[in-house]
Length: 119
Image (cartoon, rainbow, N blue to C red; front, side, top):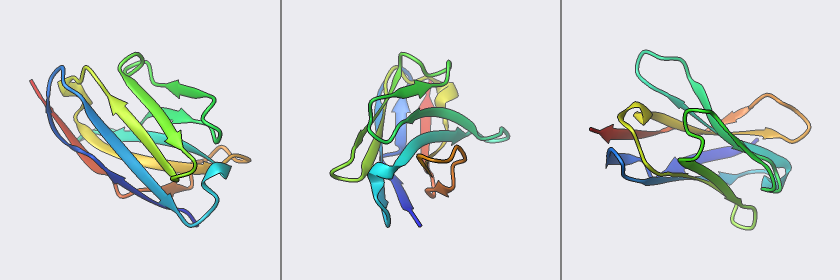
């Protein structure tokens, strides 16, 4: 089992920045690829970005590419999502997720943290 806990959500103005963090516990963090997802009211959950277990590779949804950056610290078992140039459409509950490197389905999820961007 992997336990995930997000922090860092809150209120930001359009054009501003927020940094989300996700702390993992329970298993060898460096064996897991990590991802960030979000779900806005009335919409389906969508992929925001992901990072492989070593941190050498990242990928992003087109909607956040160039504005959001994912990083991880395997020594501290944390993954971060730096969000810059925020837009009102970034408003959502953001979730941290993990899957073992040998699988492709995200099996472990955090409880989510609210991000609200005002115009």
